[in-house]
Image 1 (cartoon, each protein chain N blue to C red):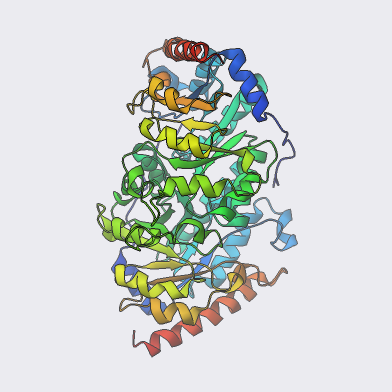
Image 2 (image 1 turned 120 degrees about the horizontal axis):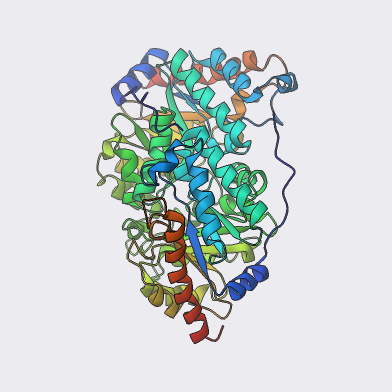
Length: 286
Length: 286
């Protein structure tokens, strides 16, 4: 029986991440949300079509993207085989492209000793650079993740889905919304400099307020493309001096073609976004 | 490559759950939070000590408990082997004790199509009766779980940890707290009759308010024992005519002995709680 692997090593701090962005002229994150019903059918004959799909996407796009973000739900849905595909994917990235920032989009969170278990799973056992965490259970559900040096905890703040507005914009007696409270309180938590925040691209009107509270933090921004968010709008209010944005695209890149040319076409789609980002960085003299 | 297993079958509805409680005179849930550093050392020589530990605990306590609740974090922390132990555990319960209610304490939640993936993982692939879900992302992050007939979604409401108070009791302009909003709104969601709620035993003063909003729902109550909650206090305000409570104990039962007699001692601890519950049911004429 294995205990926690001892292969844990520090991989990327904030300055290294910024260096990568400047050198690649890109702040793109590609979401690896693999669905067997959507990937090219010729892959289904292989032993591990999920990993094979990811491998080809990664090989075709690694020089255009800063980060890969597998959403764990898509792997868990296939049971142990799916979990195995996830492990092979993160190992493949870490071995072949160690300068890529990796995000386990897991949206975990539990009481203290239990959150530590999740943190060990993603930071040590799988050696992700970061994990997304839900804030509902408060400080002691998040701080166990922040206890890992040079690992980042990306807190759900203002999500891109319709239901995100059910609770996140509720106002307290002083007119402060829940997502603002989450931002404010999280800044008081231990090792809060290792926090990033999830803010949906479908909510560009909120970015100004968010930047007032967390001017220096990185924001992970899903919702560009398929969900309707605009890159220009997000950058207008979300960019800071150190860029401070990781813009995620999943379906728009990885499912751009259902055929054997899927990897080449995913590169074309990633290149379109990377070029747009290069222009934005130039315009902002970054 | 496997796709979703076709073994999904409906197992337990609310009336069957109540019937089980009345017949066993118990509303106990045992948390299977297995930590290799805490289980008896003689098990560590076996190929799958986690499953072996669970199996012996389950065999020793199944007639005293209504539910088992593995917390997924404890399994994920051991990678693919841990996930495999979880699958073996749920299969063992479903095969040998089909009248037991099973809870995947996973605290998941994501945007719609992604939540569906998690729901399939826990309800179909593993055939749990229920899963715990975080409410932060709102209606469309929870409804995909509720779409599964005769499966229950247990929504985090008021958690037992210290940080639970960071956001959950924030009041809006009308003095309504966030956890009350979660309860109120969730009642408007599709298939809301398949909702249960997590309410920590460390917050007995809130049970009265909660019962005003959800008089008929089951509450899953962690925090008895090690975390300091009182069974009597919880029952005083939390019981309803159909019992409406599942009281969880994890460490207090499964780690009651570090030696070879651990299963027998876990039975003694479960029996103590079951007897206390029998008395409470009698006193309340249930």
